[in-house]
Each structure stands twice: as C-alpha cells, then as structure tokens.
Image (cartoon, rainbow, N blue to C red; front, side, top):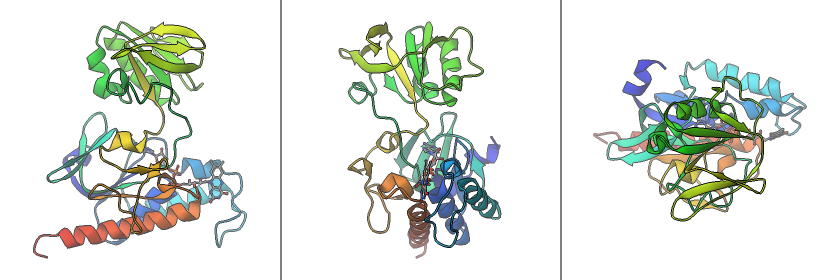
Length: 294
Ligand SMILES: Cc1cc2nc3c(=O)[nH]c(=O)nc-3n(C[C@H](O)[C@H](O)[C@H](O)COP(=O)(O)OP(=O)(O)OC[C@H]3O[C@@H](n4cnc5c(N)ncnc54)[C@H](O)[C@@H]3O)c2cc1C
C-alpha cells in the first residue's frame, strides 16, 4: 500500500467501487475534492456479471462487462487512487472520520458508503454474540483468541488470508467452507465442507452447529465479502434493512452519505449512478460550507 494513503487526509473517501462508488468518486473529483476509493473485490464486479443490460438509457442491450469496462475507463481518466482493502470500521472523531482497514486507519472529512447489498442472511446467534465471540475482522480481534479454538466462515477468498493469520496464533482453526476459492490456505487450517446452521453459547460463543453436529470454538470470524453497514459504523440508522438516507442522501451520521443498492430498492444501475453523483455533490457542498472563513 502506498505509504502516503494512510498519512494523507482525504476530503472524501468512497467505500465501494461499483457504479454508485465510481459515480460518486468522479463527481467529487470534478468538484476538486481529494478522493480515495476503497474496494477490495475489484471495480464494477457485479455489473460485469450481467449478461445483457436492457434498461440503461442510451446504451441498449449492452453487455455487463462492456458497461463495467466503460465505467472503469472513464473513472481512470481522473487518476483517483483505489486502495484494495475492505473498510472494517468507521469511527466519527472530532476532526472528521477514521476508516479502519485492518492494517491502519485512513482519515477523511466525509465518507460516501456505496457498499451494494449482501446476499447472505445472518446466521442465528450472529447478532446475539457480536463482540462476544463473533467478529468480522481477524486482524482486529484475532489476538483476543490467542491459543484458543476458532472457526472462520469463508464466503470468499479473502477469508484465506484471515484464516492463515489466525493459524499463526490460535490452537485450532476450522475453515467452514462456503466458497471453493481457498487456494493458498495453510495446511494446519482444518477445512470443514459443511454448512454452518447456528452459533450457540451462553454469555460467549461456545460452539457452531454444523449440519447438526457441534463444533466447539470460542470465536467465529465471519468473512463475508460485504459487512453489514451497521457493523461498519456505530449509530448508522437502518430502515427495512437498508441505510436510511434523506433526499440529499445524507445518513444519520454527520459527514456520511450513502448511495446505490445499499440505500434500498430498486437495485438498478441507473439509480446507483444517480445516487452516487447526488451524494458526492452534496458531500462536496457540505465540505465547502464547513471550510474555515466561511
Ligand atoms: C447478474 C446481475 C444482473 C444484473 N442486471 C441488471 C440490469 O440488467 N440492469 C440494472 O439496472 N441492474 C442490474 N443488476 C443490478 C446492478 O448490478 C446493481 O444495482 C448495481 O451494481 C449496484 O451498484 P452499487 O454501486 O450500489 O453496488 P455494487 O455494484 O454491488 O458495488 C458495491 C461495491 O462495494 C464494495 N464493498 C462493499 N463493502 C465494502 C467494504 N467494507 N470495503 C470496501 N469495499 C466494499 C463491494 O466489493 C462492491 O464491489 C444486475 C445485478 C446482477 C448480479
């Protein structure tokens, strides 16, 4: 990671590199803001999955991969840096917002959440044991379980790095495999190719139920590609499962905007692009109004 990304102070950090995030970033750059995009899975990955898009005005029957390539080409003209890291936590501080990426913090005056949506349902027990054996970040919470038995619920390849790290410090690491993409996994990590059904315990996690059997562990690290937004930022209001935003796309937390699928239905590219632009222009206006001397 370039050293100056962590030491810089950014006007706007956009979390998510889908159509909403790239539209936000481009519009913030047009407004002369210093912008950084955080995207850990590749830009416009979901758009590229669509075989054919028939409802995007002006580009009839365009293949998803062609639209994604056009978005990325346009975005790259602005030389906006992209950091290939997942945002793990955002904390509102007196001097702005701190975004934790596991290996350090990034400072921003405003944040635009363009997170998309999560496909996987939460497991029974997940909410209940959050902070008491459930974690979404091995780098952050792994050391709490040094010498213990833990499980990693792997929905994507990024879980491999986290499981490997845990294997260095924990007694046993079980990888509950919900993805086939586990190349590079250390041999001491035990792969369990079964479906987790629930997380159980008393005050703290004691085991995971895996296809009817109990797997005794003291922590479960749930590695979904996308974190639930409310886990990312304390105090963020959620309504009907989506980030609650006003007409200007501001969220319930000062300095934080949201755009795209994460603000609600319809889950469509045109909505994501429009909301990204709106959020960026309103965030830029907010920063200009906050400038000292105004
Ligand atoms: C198969 C398929 C076909 C589709 N067809 C159409 C269609 O024909 N027409 C149409 O309008 N729409 C279609 N869609 C829907 C469209 O792709 C979405 O509405 C659009 O991608 C939403 O854009 P977004 O930027 O809000 O979210 P996304 O494109 O999902 O992007 C969100 C990004 O945020 C990143 N992210 C999330 N959390 C973090 C974090 N903590 N740190 C860093 N990065 C993070 C994710 O990795 C992701 O790349 C289709 C979708 C699919 C899957």
